[in-house]
Length: 497
Image (cartoon, rainbow, N blue to C red):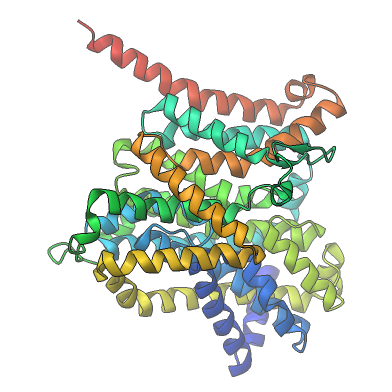
């Protein structure tokens, strides 16, 4: 009961024009920042950090957290409408969101992504409020062996991402892992595969690669197929352009499962919303009665992706507020904001400044409501983006892709990287190789390498077996790959005369 009363106290402190305007401004900036390719949630938070210097500590933190939460939803808008994920975690949303748009069901995809984001956000916030301390203590039990096993579990989702094309998916994920090794060795500092090109010493920046593989490759494929001259697919009027209440109720368990999963994964430092989205998507596909629909426009795929990445925000704030450990890059920026305002994250924050913590928790709930309202108000405008002719849309995608790539490090080299990977993505698609495993390999590569080497230095391979949690995660990863393979083999035997 004390928790609920403190939450109402925090809500009371927000019931004024200034606090509500601060939250609204944060949500608007977050949605716009998330929708713009090249502006990640952490970058949006960092860009607005100087504007909080003149605010009170509570209001400054409230605004930045609102940006963080809203940016995770904003990335889904461009992912659904033009197959250009605004944030890395929106990659998974594009798997089924964009196919729905191409079928003339943009409203369905946008509606599901909005409600799933809001539901996932509420799940993450509820777990943050109710279970912060015990969940943070659980996260502290993770050694490098557990982080390596968690990354391997994430990597095992290629069994679902390939849609039955196991060999192609395996080759694609190996390509992603190989690309991730380019640059300086994270432990020894030795250059790898740089060919004395100074720009490659930092490796490939992830955002230009992401934009190239998804946005530009789609443009190249559209030009090759002649789609640039075809009229756009208008929203289907016979079916509801916006999901009905019945549609949402069908997805309630998918949203809740993905919300809980996203929160738990978000708690572990370094995991974040992107890994949470991949794993939640994989879980939903395995539990689905029609797994073949995934990748072709499955509503449950959109719901799982959006609910999990929004819920990961609440998860990332758990170790940040209770232990001072950032659960994501955006949470790391928030630590800087706390220290700028002379606040030390950790247990003392709850004892010395409980009013700030209560205000923050309450503001996340209010920000989630604002996301729902703004998402509903802007839906009609975003649906009309599907009516833009391809001959106008493709040049815009090119322009935004290059601007977004340049904005990451103010580097023309990154623009070239975006263009090259656009061609790579197009060639992979032509050869029937899935592109998403490449992204998954690049996301998890560093996490796998660092934690594998750290584990080997701490005690060798035996640590993976000696620690029950890491062994459990590795067995789950093995089962997630082996079980579908055995099912396919049995089905093939039964079909053989």
